[in-house]
Length: 115
Length: 118
Image 1 (cartoon, rainbow over the protein chains, first blue to last red):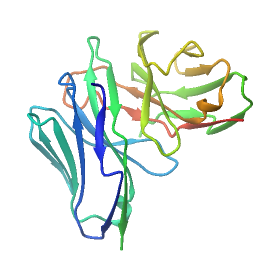
Image 2 (image 1 turned 90 degrees about the horizontal axis):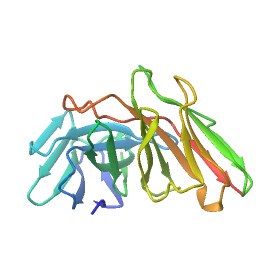
Image 3 (image 1 turned 90 degrees about the vertical axis):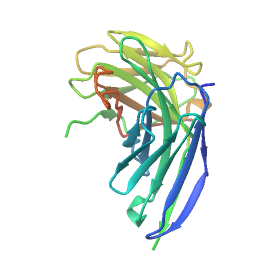
Image 4 (image 1 turned 135 degrees about the horizontal axis):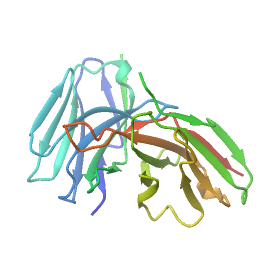
């Protein structure tokens, strides 16, 4: 129930194209859904996040679509650029009493944007 | 911009040896975490720490692991007797007290400490 399933495992997109990464979860106690971007040799960095009471959130070229009833959410990268090449992790967070969060990561998607 | 710093960046050790990985979280954060990432795999939760005690730990975090906040700035992960399967990148993270606003639960990750057990 704590798993977050992510697909695809890898993705190659032409520059200017749309990159789409999908995730699904089981546990309805999750209350926060961030996406993390990780470049080689670096730690994950928060890219964009959404709460389950919102169906879509857009920040620049990055959009999260959230379907609460289906327990699915996705990341869309518009006008993908070579600099977007990285590994993307979806995640689901559960906030416990006292405020700390437990983040459960998806398995990651390695995105390569080719010129 | 404040950041989480980790040392060492890479440590090589013999199986059975003790290892201590160190982290300096962002100064005003109150929640601290350790995650690990085996090469090419997903990031896995190990432990969360708040108010000088463990809040939650995963099944990975067995008796060989311990965490400590020895002073006001450092947060350490100790592996008492390393095994080959402990080889991974270990990430420290911290977050502000939450959950007040929309993003107060954001985790800030360090760049990781790569542990190689031979």
